[in-house]
Length: 307
Image (cartoon, rainbow, N blue to C red; front, side, top):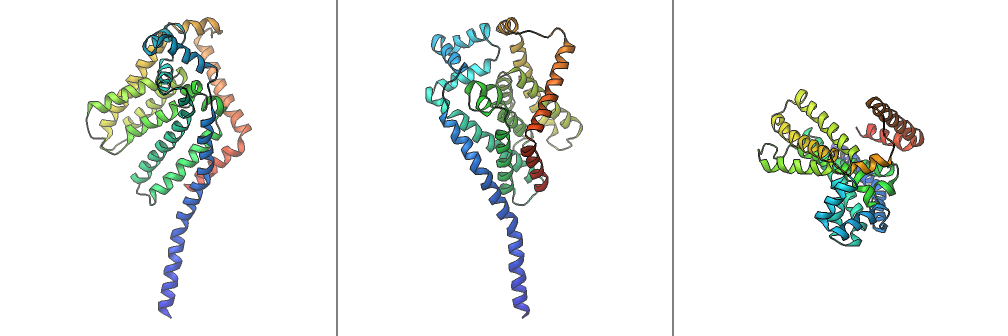
């Protein structure tokens, strides 16, 4: 009788312990299905608007001369032209693959970040939880995109709005990763400098976001991080901040800015710029939450529940 009771209790304990794993797997599969549809949708896109302009520059002038012509006469977003030029190396059909590859890459980078965080705190089922977290975050980021067809599936828009986000997450992962961070190699410093330089050159607004994010990371390491990796992280953040600053300088002095300055009405003073930026940011947040209160509420509730 006692043996049967112990066996029953043991089986019950195993079922209870296995329940979280079942929930994690089911939740990951639930979000994996719509994420796959987001990926598949990328294969149906085509050239649109600025895609023709970028391709025209490349076909008329080639990559190097086209980049110079683009920078001096049209736009300061030099990295966007470089990204398009790299895409064109694989032919016209490459435009159908790029959004899907970047979506998958973003999901993988987020997975690695969650895995690092959970492993650091010795959380059980680290891989399974990280898969679920990354699936949830990827789904809501795409679902809540203000205009997914313009910001993700349009190549010219993707280079300015979506591509920088996985790159920023990658930079954060490289800076705060526990693995091999003590290796004091200049190669990693140079690599992060080049990555941050390239990503900042994708757009002016993202360059400001990258500089602000890295600035917050710098303050965190200076005043909060007490680990043995602190000094090495300061070097890595310094490399990325220098790369960002250099890219911003290159964009500021671009002669191609004249075209936009002459075409669009400009703010009269610094106060006007700060006022417009602040009001626009607040309006965007308020209108987004007011119009999409349900998905924002679900996203917030899910992470509270999971935590």
